[in-house]
Image (cartoon, rainbow, N blue to C red; front, side, top):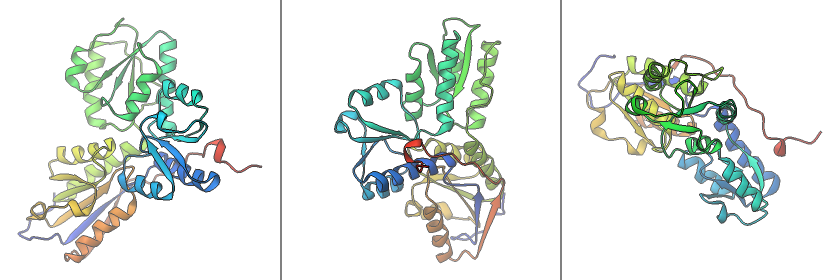
Amino acid sequence: MASQMSTSHPTRVLLTSPRGFCAGVDRAIEIVRQALETFGPPVYVFHEIVHNPYVVQELRDMGAVFVNDLTEVPPGARAIYSAHGVSPTVKAQSEERALRVIDATCPLVTKVHLEAVRFAQEGFHCILVGHKGHDEVIGTMGEVPGHITLVSDVTEAETVVVPEAGRVALLTQTTLSVDDTREIIAVLRRRFPTLTFPPKEDICYATQNRQSAVKELAAQADLVLVLGASNSSNSQRLCEVAQLSGVPAYLINDIQELRPEWLEGVETVGITSGASTPEFLVQRAVEHFQRLGATGVRLLRTVEERVHFAMPRELQPVR
């Protein structure tokens, strides 16, 4: 860790790369924007398109209407599913209301849904490692009701009961802490030696990259600030990863939430952002510390991301 100095304001700012929007979030936001441009407002979005109030408000200002129940959507209207995915029940409700749907589910979340269906069809009972009540978990659980059980921590992993111990498959929410999940999986492996896994792990590339980057950030900073919404799972995990590295770390939605006492004795402040956090919030934070007297701003680059997801067919140009 950087050496502590008796100063009330940081003199250096360290930024992670990668940070902020991932390919799935980029795609989801662009889907709403293009839908509004192509079809005109209103376009109804089932749940927050991504978990960030600034993104949601920007799209709302453009004409998007965010709803938590499809009964709020007029029959025959155009609707968009959020990046977190939905259950078959929601899709059936959309059909009943004759909604013209565009699916903005992240392809990596769709992958987990398809795995759940495949495992259930093959006679496995799925254990989903994830957080109760999260939109992504609700959607995945809804794919195979009666054939899936949620496990949220090590204690639940030690006590979970399944119909047949020899036919258990593992799935994970895409935005979990890699380290925490590793502990839970270790318990499940011990309890269910024949535990079956998907061909490729479910925690997404962006989640893993940002958590690896924040570990390196924590090794060089006196304080870590994670810019992200309080209901953003991946942002919460970034803050936890930094804290477990032994550095004070706080999740804030905007630099306005910074408390002066956090800066006591801090020379180097590290900044990262969750996968649904717009970059202007990071730049606003950097400018804040520059106004306080920070003169050095350095980028800590760990990996370059080149992932891109295609737009849904409804928004692809006609050839």
